Length: 327
Image 1: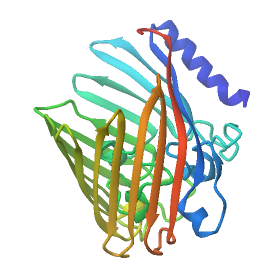
Image 2 (image 1 turned 180 degrees about the vertical axis):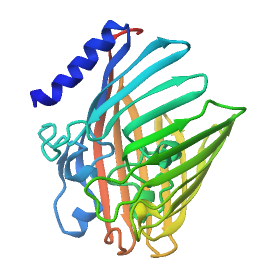
Image 3 (image 1 turned 90 degrees about the vertical axis):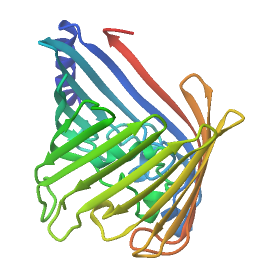
């Protein structure tokens, strides 16, 4: 473990000397419940940390990371992010993961031209489409994920080079290229590109990614949302969720009700005819601390999941602790 932590310590020391903005960030999700697979298998509900059982329990994946940014002159900043999870119910880190910073490990430059990053990072689709899921891509209850129609539905990539443009009259472009994934049979290099347009309360995004494996599927996704003030609504369509056959549509809404956020998502897979419903409610109960209740149902067996119900009752604590730089 010490050998894994020493490079991070060196990086922190070097950036601190350069007057960097450094922070330790993350969240802890503690919940009680079970996911669709556990319900179908007849397992009992239990306590989860969010990241155990392959991150399919609770609402969010418990994680911790380091991030930093420093001015290197000529209007440029050097940025990095290192993030880990794999935290079990006893809050032990890295139990099932050999790579410590296995969620995010990238560095890059930003300026008036936009931002360039290289390393392990979330896919272009996930970064662009995540905000259209009003319950944060809930681990156990996600209707869009459980039915296989999530427009954010491609995972992290290693050896990923990405470019994010600045906002240009409401338009933002995001492109990426990733080399073959190590240890994956028939892996292929993959490219991706997306475009977002946002104006006032309206936003729409479209994204595409080439197949990551021989025999896999290309991915496309489109999402749009509008905030009416009393309620925010979204509609999406996806094809090729996580590289598997399948396409379908998602709908959702969220509304503020007496200090709570109350919402629903519905996903229907037109290839498998599987449909999933997700109900959720959450509220900030203390500073940076949120209580939530999620419920989901999948109506029929599919190649993704069996028929069943899922629920999670939990609390999320979010932290972002400045180590140096601005506050």
